[in-house]
Length: 155
Image 1 (cartoon, rainbow, N blue to C red):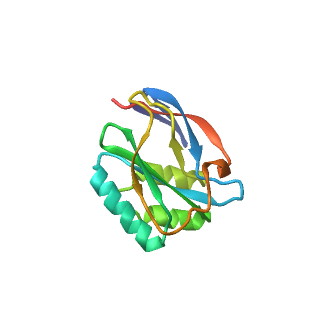
Image 2 (image 1 turned 60 degrees about the horizontal axis):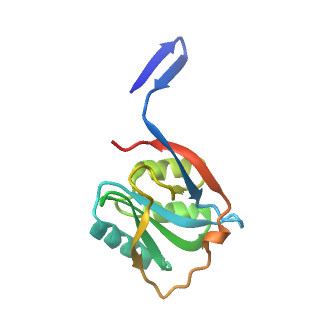
């Protein structure tokens, strides 16, 4: 629920929502580059794999790891390719089906964030790997920041 009150030229907004505290990591690497991250909601694994294979071929990307994040309709993906921020934005924006809020807030914060802990329906788990001849040039150990944050609780 969102309530807004405007007094003159000032707006006050109150939000009431169920949240859950989770942990995740940001796309930012210690050298200032980013890895590629995607979030997909309310879709099928088959579609996600097709969309990511298209992007992988178009941008000549290394292996992409696809995880189921909740139920069998929400997915996330990682590609350990060192990528300048502006290029990472282009790749993610070019991906069909990517969750608009994930993209919007990532661009707003200058980094993408995906959770790795349980949100009440189990931890994300690997469901597919899209192989590639292109070698990865980053690892989980190169990630600069782990974060704890609040997100909306699924119904």
